[in-house]
Structure formats: structure tokens, C-alpha cells
Amino acid sequence: MSSEPEVKVLLSRQEIAATVNKMAADISRDYRDRNPLLIGILKGSFIFLSDLVRQLDFPLEIDFVAISSYGRGRTTPGELKVLHRLKSPIKGRHVVVVEDIVDTGLSLAFLMGYLGKRKPASLKLCVFADKPSRRRVPVTIDYPGVTVPDKFIVGYGLDWDEKYRNLPDLSYIEPIR
Ligand code: IMP
Ligand code: MG
Image 1: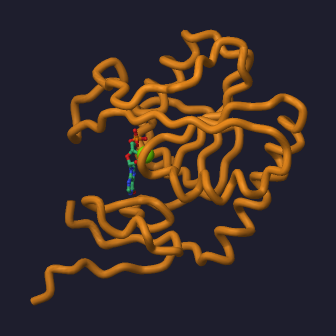
Image 2: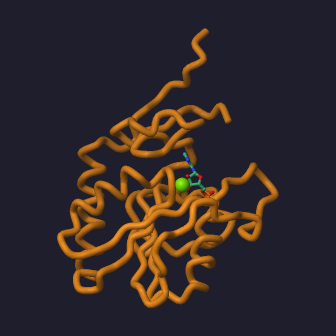
């Protein structure tokens, strides 16, 4: 019996490109003259952020944060930690957080609170994939991409045990977790 889970395509690379173009158009309309700071959340957002910024033809800056993950169950946003800190001060900046997926919402609820305390001029959220069925805390997505079903999503930067980030299509695997 093979131990490799079956991988199925949810959104093709062409559909991904169309979604990213639409999101980039919305961000361009709002940030063209604001020199925004785009903050990617490591590691999952690295491919989406790379695609997105190459569709933005105006001055901007990029930084990254990493936050601790949590076990299933009892976690609250207050128990999370920032592991890799921002290199840029965000006070007075127009900040757009760029994330791969929102699932329970715990990570983003924590991070948006953490960034909000540092007094940015504005703070918005751009998320490629929204999995609303598992939300535990509310999260407002200012620039949404696609809604995904309650499956374990991989590819386009998203991993299962650090594997499959390099798949060009947004895909899912049958649950083993
Ligand atoms: P949260 O549950 O919304 O806090 O999501 C936390 C993080 O878990 C996300 O930023 C992703 O990195 C990861 N994650 C959530 N759902 C999935 C999934 O379906 N596949 C892969 N990673 C996921
Ligand atoms: Mg993530």
C-alpha cells in the first residue's frame, strides 16, 4: 500500500493567475500613490506574494513575519508568538498583510492585533484562499481571492508536513491529519 496521499487539483494555474490579476487590480486602485508595505506571512504566502507584487507597477516595499503554529483544539490568539520579526517599522505606513489561507482565523486575529498596536496609517488584509467552514474567530478579508471547501489544501505555497509547496496548481489531499 502506498503511503503517499492522493493529490487533486482544486484551482488550475490559469485560474490562479486570473484570481491574482483581479486582486492586484483592486490593490493597485487603492495603493498606487501610498508606497505600501506588503507583509507576507512565512512560509505559505511566499509564492502568492511573489505573483501578486509582479502585477503591481508602483512603488512598494516588502517584509515578512513568521508566527508560531498551534496544535489542534485549545489555542487562543493570545498564545501565539511572532517568530520572525519585521525588519521595517510600520508606524505611519500603509500596511497590507498578505496570507495564503485563512482557516480558523487564529493566526490572523493574533497578527492583525499585533500589527495594529504598532500604529500603521492603515492596515488591510489580502488572502488568497478563504476556508470559512472552520472559522473560530472572525477575520475581515479586505482583498479576498477564492473560497475553498473544508479540505486540506496544498500547492501554490501551501504545505502538508512541508511537502507540496511547489505544486503550481492549488490542490487538496484526502485527510490523513
Ligand atoms: P488559521 O487556522 O487560520 O490560523 O491558519 C493558520 C495557518 O495554517 C495558515 O496560515 C496556513 O499556513 C495553515 N493552514 C490552514 N489551513 C491549511 C490547509 O488547508 N493547508 C495547508 N495549510 C493550512
Ligand atoms: Mg500561513
